[in-house]
Image (cartoon, rainbow, N blue to C red; front, side, top):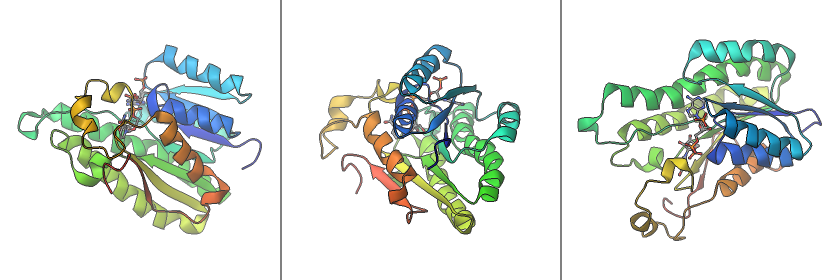
Length: 242
Ligand code: NAP
């Protein structure tokens, strides 16, 4: 990395994305912090990044909205191109497929898959010109095993795993590494209403993961130590899927 390298993290106002932003700031990166609408939470993460001596630029926009992504990124990308892109933003709208509304189906796919496309495709060309970059997509165990009540979410995350592998092949010769990190159950707002006691029985390590444990694996994939890793899915799941 160089002194001026930037990491763009989507969905970084809370949860796993926030921990990734703070961890990469600690590792020396300036941060471009995307989120959808929670300005207060985003400001708090930005303050932590700045306390670590790094710059933090807030980029609030809905990744599923193509024109919003274009508007937010067009000008800033004329000045600089991030070395790291972490596609972390994601939502769940759980329910059995039989009852699932078209809206719940589309929302989940739009944030994960369209969001990946809207942000990554804008940055790709610039990274390719520079012949360096790291892209990390946050997927889920649900996309690997399938999870009842999450047909939309499992489809979105499985799709993102496919996109990770295909893009890794497309850009390897341009010096860009593309990988996915796949958390199991992690303590965040997304999992706060789950029946924890029941779920813990399924996890060999008998606990949920922390956001910092996921961020540490992302940081590894961004590091020089990961220079021969591309197209992979790294599981951070306490053994719930092996
Ligand atoms: P979270 O606590 O619910 O936080 C979601 C973050 O994404 C927030 O910063 C939110 O911004 C942002 N966001 C949501 N929709 C967005 C959109 N359309 N455009 C831009 N930003 C958006 O989620 P999390 O649990 O940290 O999950 C982060 C990622 O890890 C997701 O992709 C999730 O699927 C994946 N994951 C989570 C778990 C888990 O157990 N928690 C397990 C496996 C995978 P606002 O604050 O502005 O709403």
